[in-house]
Image (cartoon, rainbow, N blue to C red):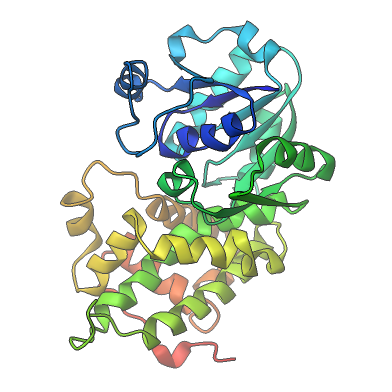
Length: 346
């Protein structure tokens, strides 16, 4: 039996308590300053997470961040950061305040960081910022939190430069329904985790931009499939520019996660609005008001990389046509347009 700390009681952080406790581990689930209502609900008798269908095991102890102590980290065997990208600075601050002994830390946070080279993954930028983090582990792959919480078959990938650390985490977390693989390509997994949100916007736009009224769902399939393939190619090229391996984009961390994200969620909903001819600001200020749409953050980060001059090819219309179309729609408020003549047909 191990002791695990999960920072962040959102849907993903809380869903990870399910395989952990099914394996007999004890979990300290720490709510962020934005999670006070969730922690209060989970501490009620028979309390259920507001966005999950599964009640927490009695092996889970939900606490607010104000109750967190250094001793909790000293006793922990494993630390997981389950916050979204806007919360990463808070998580880093907590880790630096509370973690006084070396520990490996796993991250489900998806995002990209500005760096001296223009842009980098968390695998590169977080280790220097957290002195007591003995190893960085990136968790990626197609995982809808509610499905994992309900023990639906789920495959994910754990990445660490030290493969032994990744395997140790997998041994602790893997179950018959939560199937895990390992890789040393932490930069590639982190790059894909962010990029798939961005590309899901463009792929999802095809579902509404080319309607088929005779289908039950009203969507043509050929344009979406073509854009999905284009997204995988562009994701592989950008993955390499961010220090990863192109092959990672064609596995769980890339096309697997992209498939799930296109299937639903905030990035997909933004794409549907763009495909229907609406502006990004219209969708973001109405049905997505107050929501974190991480693909938009990634678009801004890619623009930073562009302006640094380190990867100007990202705007090459012949090489990254889908990325260019998404950035124009999200950042410049242009109507979403994707010229199928630019497809890299293979």
